[in-house]
Length: 167
Image 1 (cartoon, rainbow, N blue to C red):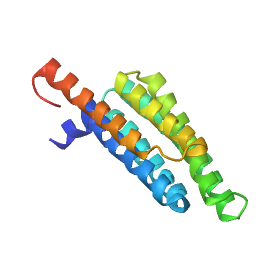
Image 2 (image 1 turned 180 degrees about the horizontal axis):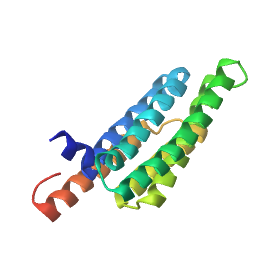
Image 3 (image 1 turned 180 degrees about the vertical axis):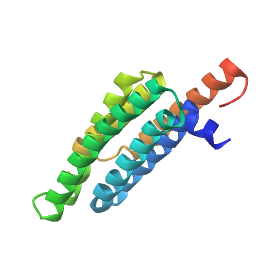
């Protein structure tokens, strides 16, 4: 059962969208804490990306696991570098949060290039739009809630329509 949840594209998408929406709320309400949140989400998204390759046992999956681990580890090292710049006082809270968010967008974009699906493209575009609106806009939270609900509903109905069961 747990393996099915970890391999399900719909559940990955749902979790990624809910965490991204929570990130929008954190970035909007608690901008000073956004760098901590996005650093934690970089780790969570890395685990979600690596889990399917880890659960498969073929030699090809092991190669994909190694490549995935190297890619996400590089992103984590970059984010930790930004975090250390923030801790030393060279970056403000909001700036550090946005830079880490853009590192997450870049890492997720690379993951989308590796396995392109409409769900991963949607999450990538959602995160990129969130980063741009954080940089330039003020009132965006309501639109992001609606966009997340539309994406989740589309994923649910696409999955149930194809298989008859939401997996």
